[in-house]
Image (tube, rainbow, N blue to C red; front, side, top):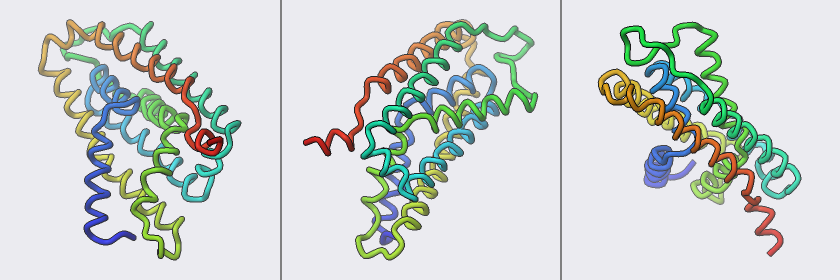
Length: 220
């Protein structure tokens, strides 16, 4: 494990990176705006679970294999891009819930929350760039003399993921509070969701056009 100052730097850098808007944050915010803060928190937990898949895979070497295998990266890239496009199109054609005295309808049913959780999980798992991010970021904080580097990688990745929970919950609560206290959000929610769907479609297209950084560097 890194020294105290390096560990503090790791935590701060991780929090700042988690605050950066991307597909995960967008998914949390749109779920919270549409169905309340609880749905946003569940979406964040799904994303956290997805991150653990990447962390574990990278720790045992699957991520490194994907970084050097153009074929594997391409397969995962197209699956992830297709999923993001599907999420965006589904949001584009969905209808707003009917008014029932609340700014937005909560999702109390377990089946509804399960769907939100799985949506967050697959949004994260099917994005190979998340695995490449962990491979690029975490090793910088592992000392060369560390005996068990896979274990150190897993522990640091877990710490990063644990800290991300607080950021994700913050995004969910902020979006949920906004949905309940700002009347203009209801009037503009139709366009907000359409804008979010366009962003998801854009993320999907960008992922589809992305090149494998590891494969590209090996060519040169």
